[in-house]
Amino acid sequence: MNPISPFFLVQLQILLPPASYSLESSVLEGYSHDESSQKAVMPLAVVWPENAGQIAAVLKLCNEQRIPVTARGGGSSLEGNAVPSPGGIVLSLEKMNTVLEILPEDFQVRLQPGVIYDDLNRQLARFGLFFAPGPSSGDVATIGGMVGNNAGGMNALRYGVTRDHVLRLQVALADGALLWFGTRAMKSSSGFDLVRLMVGSEGMLGIVTEIVLRLHGLPERRTALAHFPTLETAAQAVFEVMRSGILPGALELMDAVSIQHLNIFKKWSWPETPTLLFEFHGAPRGIAEELEITRQLCQEIGATTFREAASPAEREQLWAGRKEITRAEQDIFAGHIFFKGDIAVPLSQYVPTIQKAQNLAEEHGLSISAFGHAGDGNLHTTIPALPGDAEACIRAEKLMDDLIRFALSVGGTASGEHGIGLAKRKYLSEEHGAAVEVMRRIKQVLDPNGILNPGKMFLE
Image (cartoon, rainbow, N blue to C red; front, side, top):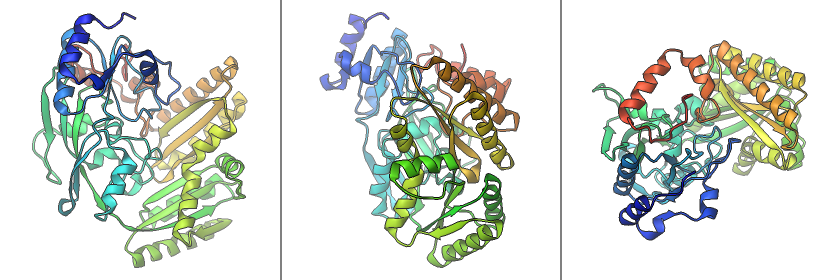
């Protein structure tokens, strides 16, 4: 890889304050990877702009010099979305982390892309509001990263994914132009929906510099946990609850292996069987009725246990079970590589997909855990393998490949909420067919020199 040119360095020094860029190898190494298993790539430089004007100026310079730019939020991407493009720079949005304006009467907030999800909701809570999606990595995930990947989360069943909450965006295009897309109106039928085009584009069409989000009132919440003898009975409970007209705030499934990992890590004694975690949102009287109906349905279907959190502390403990599966597995399988999957399928195919994952793991002689957002068919899987066991790593990759293709074969998607990045490029055409060419044309129009996160999403 060629070192950064003297001309480019001089221009960076003109455009940015001294503390806003680095060429130090130790710094570059820290930004050479994300949380995926994709190979690290050392960037030429890391820049930390502090405002939209600086982002636009850096993009204009990079476009003129044909230098790739990879935007980065919290670095928690799981598909290689934030791995630097070879010969390029990383544009980190960490310093653009200000909530600019909370508009409680409009149920809106205006903010910079580097704001962390959990930090935002702490500020919004003072106004009785919250930004709903609920990613499990909310302590590190930035709003800009959520916009880039159209992130979902545990509240997506009731409230929708990130795309459903973005009203307006300021975007820096590849040539340095700064544009606003969308309005602050709660709906519009005026022109093409460029906001929804940008959400989920993984930094390949422009870099978001400011965001206006739609918010929801902070509801009363009640949480319950139910254990079932089989996946089939757990799935039947999901169907019956949703058919009853109840729309839970969250409806999460953990398989027996996930519960086993939690018991080891937390020193708990939960029944090691398929488990559903329900959360109900709304007014106190309404959610009390929803919880009681859900209890009756689960017991009729064959739940072995059903318990409601009796206090805020117990509610937090139940949610810790769901949120700490990954941490438990990292502790139990310390030193392993983790092959993680994120797919979504029609609800009727949710249990068959989990069963397919389990059967594939048995065929390949591997361990797999499965958990996810059961109410919207989103499944996460984790396969640990020792890095020195090349054969096991190959089998794990084959397992993931087989599982994704199974999801596609039953009408699902290769990525429910993590994006395509580097890891899932080969599935894009299988899922979208000739429509991928339309995506390429859009990319060509907005980024004719191909500097924005090149190499991602599309196979070259």
